[in-house]
Amino acid sequence: MLSDQQFAELMAKTRSGDQDAARELVRQYEPEIRRAARLRLTDPRLRRIVDSIDICQSVFGRFFKSATDGSFDLEKPEQLLVLLTTMTRNRIIDEHRRQTTQKRNRPEPDGRPFDPCSVIEDSPGPRTAAAARELLSEVRSRLTADELQIADLRNAGKSWEEVATELSESADGLRKRLERALDRVRAEIEASPIG
Image 1 (cartoon, one colour):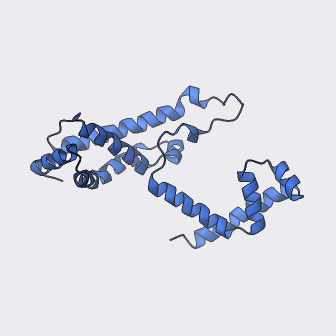
Image 2 (cartoon, one colour; image 1 turned 90 degrees about the horizontal axis):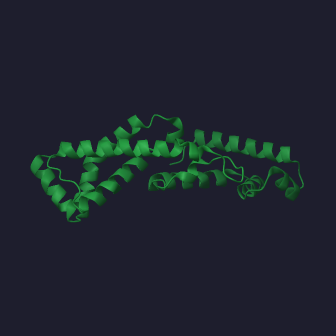
Image 3 (cartoon, one colour; image 1 turned 60 degrees about the horizontal axis):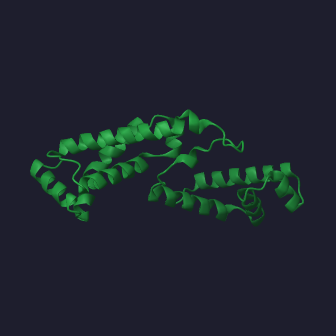
């Protein structure tokens, strides 16, 4: 942990817009903030939507915005830890409320079921997005041309009946073929992890 003098110098540099000072604050406090986020992300539905990295990035983003305009008068490193932990708790509470409000749980006017991903304001962190792209690329590379065609038609929003008509096969047969293909790819990836 930083001494009071080191902390005061780091905060002064951060307020003046020093990127190195901001990076050092993140380096010092990120592990604690991510730990606090993981401890509070107890709802499995919420954990599927946001993770500790997303929460941490959001908290630091809000902190630095307020720190540069002088909103915080912090003298000790412990005060910053308490502030960031409180911001983390509040961010998770806000996200939980946003996901569970009755208004958002109603079906859409067109009758489609509610999609929780549609209410997320923050994009996933860069690591999460990169990992998802890498996994999708790996899955696509392991599908045969026929399997990939079925998957692409379904991802384009076509029903199984529409896919069946386009490919001149039965809807059930195509659905089962894609399920088996995805099961096979999942087993292959689990047997030889990416990276």
